[in-house]
Picture 1 (tube, rainbow, N blue to C red):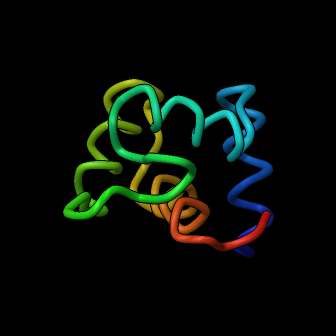
Picture 2 (tube, one colour):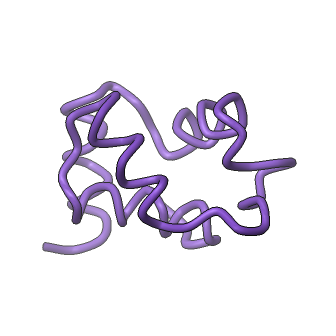
Length: 72
């Protein structure tokens, strides 16, 4: 599955874009000024996305990749 396919599936499932997830991650304290805060690990993001949005590992990693700077 391509990166864009992951993003498209996430949007279909949650109605949220990577930008929406970035805003939510800032509210949760994972990001500051659009950048991952020091010490935040992928596992923390994966756990949050699984718990709050029922996303699997691969889909959560796609969102994490956008937090690390990967473009949509």
